[in-house]
Structures are given as structure tokens and as C-alpha cells.
Image (cartoon, rainbow, N blue to C red; front, top):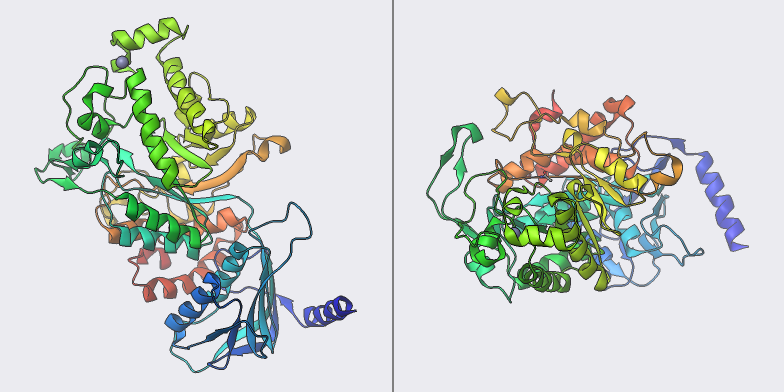
Length: 526
Ligand code: ACM
Ligand code: ZN
């Protein structure tokens, strides 16, 4: 009886609603907007469990945006914002979906999980103004919403340049705002090892510091002599993982191998083919000295990964795999001996052997590996997911082999690329990836048939920091391109209506300004 009544009420409300546009990014899947409003004032309660993170998050955000102090109550009061956790009726429910219904008497945000409620809250907060007020009006609305892609990510290289934990948390906040759920934390590189590993203290005593950095353009080949570096303690990492987890963001750590490992080799040169000595990289680019696939190296990497697995509960662990020159392996007696003993064809198969051994270890701990698309060369490890960066071809090949894929092609997803004419922009690595180009990105390649499409988990933007020295510059490179990517991944981007996106983007500018984010202003006027 009650459900019939609710249904009739909805029908009645729906009839007085119309399809409409609200300035929310990513645009929700289904939105109906009515003619009335619900008014939030200091008499409004948030009805939820008083210890609910989501309820407290909403309360604090409304206070920051409007100055209004709302109370949280577990009692069912009139004039409430209800956060309702639903009982899933089917086994394979979408844990990310949510619904918002605003009527003149209440706001109901409902979802099957706290993650769904969190996304509903993000949508609601985008309808709350940044203005000190005694009362704010939220239009009658009915939104039912869920993302298209499961992997909605942002990568961040903290090795070429180091960024403090306070900024890492801000970066996570930016993901949360755009309902993104994966933070790919690139923690080791030629130019710096950034994660404390208790068993190998030299990784950070030695590997976290370099005696100079490239300055200016790569072609100038200029290097300063300033000691540069930093690292995250395991305590700091635990704090960040917990911070992200509350915001329903999974951190996928990346420990690079077998290439991009000069900082580790500077600390432990015995893991190389030549024995060194080495210094932590000062120049950008690709280095010939990489891990030698000997038993000692595998023991080292398994011990490192054991500490990494204990810190990061993610399903996937990123093991790098990109840009590994085979120069040293070609002239190393040990490497050649393994090639012969294992019946490998060449050094590409040796790389494949390397990755497969690591995969076996990671799988034995109940986790999966993901690697850059070079891990396809010489044969893909049996359960590995592929991150397609040299275009989408690697991703297509992997999906056809029934391997999961994250798309991040340089053409559309490299946020270290220029976003305007280079002469008008701060120095960047190159390329050209405008806001509109990001908005035009389609993570699903046309080449895949229906059964293969399920292997495309989603996409992410990569933020490499050779030419990005400060948090302000990171913000400039990601904002507002991140909002375009978020909408692509939510599945509601319509490249034919870029104007509509640009119109809704105006509201994002208010959010950016109020959060003192150093966004690229030209993107709003050009
Ligand atoms: C990469 O950009 N080297 C993955
Ligand atoms: Zn070797």
C-alpha cells in the first residue's frame, strides 16, 4: 500500500517536472527538474547515523559554502536532508549508483552503499551556492545516476618532483569532487624513490635524493646542482590511504620495474647488470641501467612489494613495465644465461619472464598486476591488466586477448601536455591536449566487439611532473581538463554539445575560485 502511494506521489511529482539541465559535472544520467524549491536553513537536519562520515562531510561542506550550521540527527524530523542506505534487492547491484529526490518538504539521497551516498552528496553540493546566506533554495529535482566506467582515474608522478602530503590530500579531494575513484600514485622513478621501505632503508636515504635537476627545456641540457628530494613515510602513506578510502578512492601504487629504476640502483647497485656505481637521475628521459633479472633482484622486489601490499589494499598493484631499454641485458652474461636456460627468444621475452615472475608473486598474495602497454611485448602475463599509453592499440590488443584495460593514450589523457599554443603557456613537455580534445575522448575503441568491450575498465589522465614543479602548476595542468575527463568517464559526455559542457563549466569556476585552486583561466574564455 505504502509503495503504491509512493509510486503515485512520484508520478504526480514527475508530471510537474521537466527534463532540464543543472550545472553539475559530471552530468548525471537522468535529471528531472520541477518548479518549486526546498529551502535549507539552520532548522534543517541531516538525518543519518551521527557517526556517518558522509553526513559529517555534507554538514562541513554546507558550512564552508554557505556558513549554515546544520545538525545531524538519527531521528526522523520534518524538513530534513535524509541519507538513506537501501537494502540491495539483487546480487549484482551497482554500488556506485544513487538517487536524489528534492521536494518541498525534504531532500532524500538514497543509495545501496556509502559510496553511492557520497556521489549523491557531491551532486547536491554542486547545487549549493558559495555564498553566505540564511537560507538556500534547492530546486525540486529527481536525479537517478550511475557511472558508465568502473575505473575513473588520475595518475600523479611525485618522483620527477616531490609534492607534500597536504597537496596529495587536496589532489584526492579533487578526484572526490568529480566522483573519480582511482588514484594512481607513481612512487618510484629514475629521479627519485618516494616510499619508505623498512627492509631497505637506503631506498630513501640514498634513492630519494638527487644532486641536481634539469632546468628549462630538455634541449638546453642544463642541470642545476641543488640537492632535491623527499619521500613519504609509511605512517604518512597509511594516513593518505585512509583519507582516500573515506572518499571512496582506491590508491593504486606504482613500483616501477624493470626500467625507470635508477634511484633504486643508486641505493643497491648489486641489483643491476654492471654493479654500478650509479647516482639518482638528474636528467629526464630513459636510462640504460635497469634491474638485472637475477634471484637477488626478485627477492628484493618481493620484499619491497610485501611492504607495499601491506600499505595499499588495492586490487591492482602497478608494476610499471614501460620504457625498459634492453642494452644492458644484451651484454650481461647473467641475463644471457637466463635467456638460454629458460628457452627465451630474446630480451623482450626476458622482460616478459620478469613481469610474469612478479605477477606470480602478486597473485599469490591475492592481488593483480597492471602495467604499461610494453608488458604486451614478449607475451602478456596471464592475469595482467594493461594500461594503454602509446595510443589505444595496446589496449585493443589486450582486450582482444581478454585482459582488462585502462585507457590513457598520450593523445587525449596526458595532462602534462600543452593545453594551448606553447607560446602562451608555461613550459611543458610537448604535445597538445585541449579541454575540448579531452571532452572528445572515447575510452571505448570502435575496434572491439561487444564481448570484448567489457575488458575496458575505464581511463585515467596522467600527470608526469618533469616540467611541473609546484602544486599550483599541477592545478593549472589538471583544471579544468579533469572536469572534461570526469564527464567522459561517467558516460554522459556529448562531444556534439561541447557548448552545454562549457556552460555548466561556469559553475565549476566558482568552485575553483572558492577553493583557491590555480586553474587555467583561459579555458573559460577561449
Ligand atoms: C609513460 O608515459 N612512460 C608511461
Ligand atoms: Zn643482467
